[in-house]
Each structure stands twice: as structure tokens, then as C-alpha cells.
Image 1 (cartoon, rainbow, N blue to C red):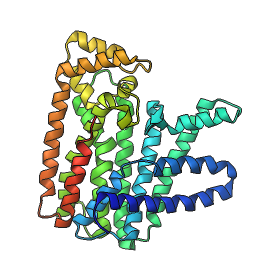
Image 2: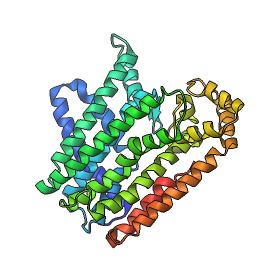
Image 3: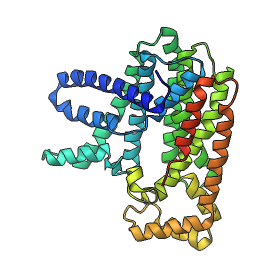
Length: 357
């Protein structure tokens, strides 16, 4: 298969489509009431998404000097199911109303409850459904990997990475939830959350997964995986920092979220930690008063954005993104990386950190 991002995305979508059709047959044989579950997850997984995690796994495979076959592509596609789990649960924990311009899963099932005039509380039903659909996506990510038909040695090697990745993700998610209860903002803590909640499972671990599927004997101490970490870790942090910027300054048409959504949710990001460090006492008070207010008006969001820019924190985050991107690009030129992977690695780095507002 050609290593172009478009070709890889198409192959990933094809594998997901086949897998989800098989699971629909199984679930609906249990009960017809599970049809909305199948519908919701198919829409979530097949309509939209950049497929970044499978793309980085593909790049990791190329970095090891191999071209993925269909079984390897299927294994990489399982990362989209892990991503679905993380996003569904993240939206529930954050109380987000939308994802990719559509109702978040908990809101979708809340709406189905009301439309069906069901007994009980619609909000409670939506929350419970989101927990279960997120869990189901996590189980399916395992199932799809286990049944991908990659070799036994590749599967065993992949599972070691897969397990570490999931542990790191859950640790990062908990730290993110806990951060909301901290009395003071912290750049150090927010950077750590960015690394574990997003960076490692978005870029570093998918790279490792693809590499060990191609080269099962590669350990975490091998030169290849060390270099892939040197590329993936700074890029993963830059990716999350860009997400943080988009969460406040992004265009809803691009982000699929309302303007300034992270301000309404009061997210403790690196950008906000830097802002609080640099802000005057009056600006800090103004920000602290309004952060986390779900009813912020568009006018108030604009004034808070202006305060953030005035502190210089936006410029500092942009400089940090640039520095991290340079570190990543330098690692991509290592001799340990097979030449066939370099164009894709460099293109993905650009995609990850240069997303527009």
C-alpha cells in the first residue's frame, strides 16, 4: 500500500466498516434494542475523524522498514476504537454538549430517551449509556486487535505496548479530572497531563505499536523505539497544546465545538496555567470568576480571550509548540528511521501542530 495519508485513512475506514458490520450482526442478534448502540458507534467512528493514531502506527511500521499488510492495518484500526472510548468518556466527564458538530454521546442518548417518552430521568439514561458505549468501544479495541490475524509474535509484542498505552491514558484522564479540584494552576502539572492524557496515546505509543508489529523483537530500549519516542513525545505535547489553543480560540466550524468551549468548562490547560502566572491581580481575578461558567456569553468569551492574549501566554505557548515541533522533526531525520517513513512522519508532524483556528 502507498504510504500517503489519504490511502491509509481509506484502508483504516474500510477495516472499521467491516468490523462494525460484524459487531452489528452480533449485537442485534442479542436484542433489537441494541440497534441505537450500533447506529451511534458507527456514526461516531465512520463519519469524521483524522485517523491520526492509526496513521502514526502506520508510520511506525514503515520506520521499522516494513510495509503494512491488511492484517497490520486491521490491528492499527483498533486504535480508533480506543480513541472513541476516550472521547465518549471525556465528553461525559467534561459535560460537553457536542463532538464534531453533533451531540455528544451522552446527549444523543438523553435525546433518544426523551423522544421515546421513556420512564425515568433522560439525563441519567444518557450518562449511563455513554459509560457503557465507551466501555464497549474499549472492549472492541481489544477484540479487533486480537482478531486482526497478525502473527502470534507480533500480537504479543503489540499487546505489551497496547496495555501500557491504556494504563497511561487512564492515568492521564484521572489526573485531568483531579486537576479541576486544585486551588492553583500549575504549568508543570498541566504539561504532565498533556503528555499522558493525549500525547503518549496519540503519537508515541501508536508509533511503537506499528513498529513492534513489524519488528516483534524490538524492545523499549531498542534504538528504533527510543528514536520514535524522541519524535513522538514532543510532538504529542505540541499536539495537545494546539488542542488547548483551539479550545479557546478555535473556529466552531473547524473544531466541532462551541466557541470558547474550554472557558465554559474551566479546563486547566497549559495555556491557562501560563495565563494565570503572567496575569495582573485584577486580570487573574476576572478570569477565576468566570472560568467554568457554562453560561458565558459570546461577549464575555471575547473579553476573556483578550485578557489571555494580553498576558503574552498565547505567544509563549506558540513558541513552546514551535520548539517541540523542532525537536520532533530533528528526531525524524535519525538514521534509525527507515527512509520510507520520513516523508509521512514529517507530514504528520505538520498536521498535528499546524491546525488552523
